[in-house]
Amino acid sequence: MQIYPAIDIRGGKCVRLRQGDYSDETVFGDDPVEIALRWKSEGSEWLHLVDLDGAKVGHPVNHDVVRRITETTGLPCQMGGGIRNEDSIRQAIDQLGLTRVIIGTRALREPEWFADVCRRYPNKLALGLDAKDSMIATDGWLEVSQVSIMELAEKFTEVPVSAVIYTNIANDGMMQGIDPATLSDLEQLAGIGLPVIASGGVTTMDDIRRLKEISDRTPNLIGAITGRAIYEGTIDVAEACRVVAS
Image (cartoon, rainbow, N blue to C red; front, top):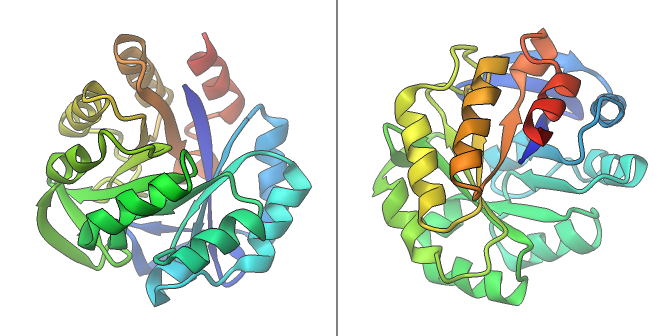
């Protein structure tokens, strides 16, 4: 199990939103590369990047910052935000140096297309499941669909998807911890054989330990993304990395 420090990029800066609300933004640093190096120095072996501008407009925007992070840190990085066609996938992998590309909105709307590109880019693409009340949210969390997370996830159990990233948007950035329903969803997703990464509400070391307990029972829970908590100091990245490695 890995800890994925989140670096959300908007206007070239490292920010966090509450529940994906673009009007409720906190800036945590003017230089995302410096922040990425900090998380590397504390033991992170992966980074989770989000192009918030890209998520809103429907195509990646912060190319230069992302490229500098991958080149400077040398760490494997995954990124989501506006990646909705094969050209942007190819650019993200070949030009930006990303190890894993996260697809959300278009995977929901065109699951056959997503399965097809996963086969063309085996183990390079992650399915972004952004959920509210176990239903899928799309378009940078601006819309909630009538499709359940399990209904969508089950379409991809035979596809070479690199990971399923489950974000409970009701918890994201709220510093309220992971609720029992989210823990249940995560264990259920991992139980059908998909590699799952938890996101949204990972606030305290107790949250990390609860996720580690699920991972010990169901090894397909392969990671946890944490954002605001590491910037506000309720999770220590170095300690979290030690806990999940134990």
